[in-house]
Image 1 (tube, helix red, strand yellow):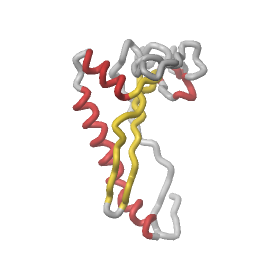
Image 2 (cartoon, rainbow, N blue to C red):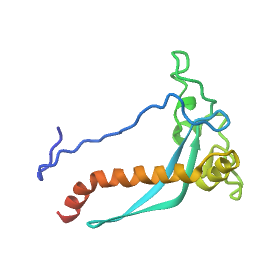
Image 3 (cartoon, one colour):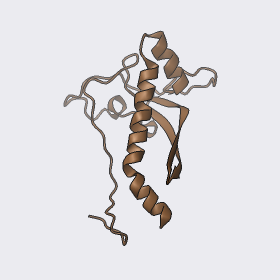
Image 4 (spheres, rainbow, N blue to C red):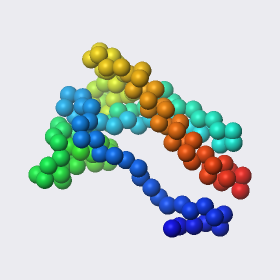
Length: 147
């Protein structure tokens, strides 16, 4: 336990779950980088920016097996990991939002809608997770803001 003078216990935490059947685009895993701004913590006000990034792996996905677990460019979407892979594609054209190893959220929206996927529901679900996550830490935010 890491405790502060105020009695709150804090520790660095990462909460995630590995998806065994991830949604793939052209055989590649991706994640979303969505930006949220906490405007006020008491009362709680959150702004979720309506764009961001879809960051792609640079190796086509295969379910994790002992022979491919160390292939980080297949399983991790981190830019810092994938930018060194020979398959990383830099998008040189700002108008092309769905090309390269990083797309804009708007490019992802266009791709999903073109391929019959419900982008609006996916986006609403992401915003819901963001809001609930910030709500879960609101008491600590408010306490820190007032102290």
